[in-house]
Image (cartoon, rainbow, N blue to C red; front, side, top):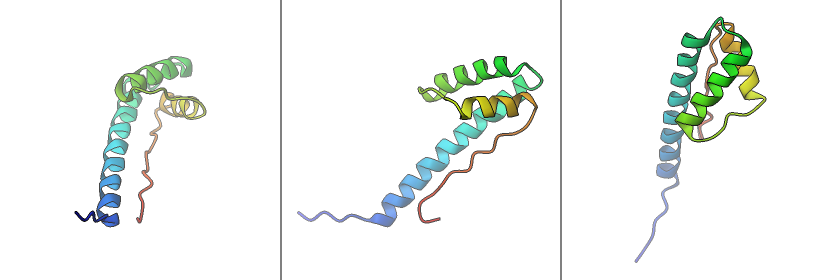
Length: 87
């Protein structure tokens, strides 16, 4: 039996997975901005951390948590830009 490793196919698959996760992250961040803008940064931080944990089953930690909460509290948008291999 012969096993062929197609690097391009593996890279494309990984890039699609990263793109999908980035879209999920962007949707969550946009939702938090919509529901939490104008609120106290500390409250936004708690909300963002809880929603992130619930959605992605992992913690969002500093420095991202604090920086993003501050931006979202002001009504600013946090943009997720995935880093793709070979792009």
